[in-house]
Image (cartoon, rainbow, N blue to C red; front, side):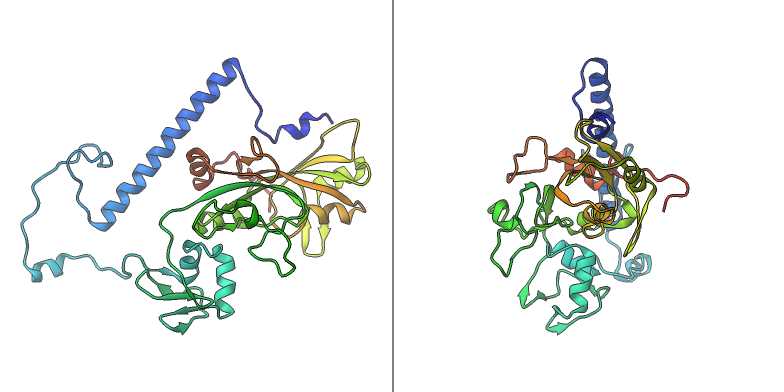
Length: 337
């Protein structure tokens, strides 16, 4: 296969009529996303019982701005007030930790069960315990708060770098690289091995991290793999049809040779988030992975970010991630698991 078999996974420059059509679709998609955000804000206001002010841009079309209703007696008001089963701001404890930027919700659940979290001075080991911002919550003895400002950083991770906050052996971590990117506590969305390079998203948005790492969303990931020997046609097909590993079966969504003259370098698209999954696929077939580089995660690529450098995501990238744009979510076909 030609190099194009791999390059299809990476955004390609377009021109002429295709470029105009792409811009048109981009604007159309932007308007649709803005409309969805506006609808969400409207529903939120209605749920809170807030009144729209005159000239409010989020007010539904045709809203009438009548004079405020006259006060009613407490007795009458109590009869008409809707029943609330939960107070505003209440959420599960693991969700609170995610919004506080400690980690994703799944990781938070494990930390809570291990007894690292206390609420109002009492250790809680149930991730679903209801809490609010009014509660005093400590994680490993340090009080934590829900973040109001989310930060999103894209790092082009270099080799010999650990994807953790601290390393007992004092090896370099991704946090040493991003340095003063934010005063907020960031954490990586998923992990990359010490010697795996490429796209890594860092954020304090636990809700988004939960979505991007949850198996049900099947987020696309594309890697360039350098092997110790050429990949045979038989093994090429085995990777596409599926292999049985110690923790279950797995298959690539797509695979291709990046250079017809050197079949030891391949591109592979996969949605599984299992630990060291790409390396284990090739090791199962008797190959040694010399280099592994993640060139795409969701809609994020390394374009314009040198190895060992980072940048903030732009508004469009954040919006696409939050709305789980179908361009980077694997298309599920009948019979797919």
